[in-house]
Amino acid sequence: MILSKLYKKYKEEFVWGLVWGLVWGLVGGLVGGLVWGLVSGLVLGLVGGLVVILCNFSEALPFLVGVPQIVLLLVGIIVLTEVLFWLMPKEKVKKKDLFKHTLKRKVECLFESLLVFSGITQLYILIREGIKYLTYEVLMEILKWIGYIGAGLIILAAVIGLFYLWIKLNERKFKK
Image 1 (cartoon, rainbow, N blue to C red):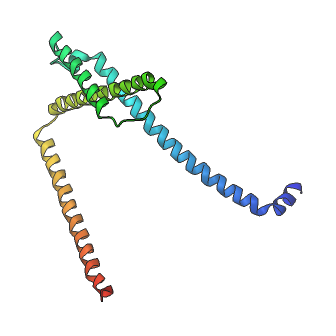
Image 2: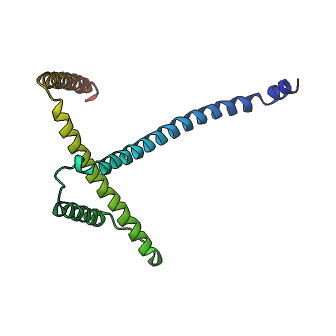
């Protein structure tokens, strides 16, 4: 009885509160879930790939066998870090926060350069391992799918071109 009286008295506020609660709950849940899923998947994938590469370093990168090659890789990482740091846009920083800010940006550039080299390494491993399974049948299947995609793109371009022509011809109606 009390609930029905409250519902009758505050019906509109109750309905709008329920609707907005459902909408914001759904939107917040979807956006939060997507963002969390993407970020955690990306971080875990990169960390997992880096761990696998570091554990199987000699197998992953067989051309890094000597000290000169490893030193060259480290020099490349340092050079890429410096290039990325100097390509960053200038920022206004307070004088007392200058060291902390510079350190933060240098570490950020170091992680970016490590990410670049990790991606190159993973691409190298993927190509090296993928060549083992590249047979004539697989190559023909890939070429067939490339043909399907090319035909689809040509048909899509033709449809878009016809639609554009149709609109351009119909725009003559409004020209006087």
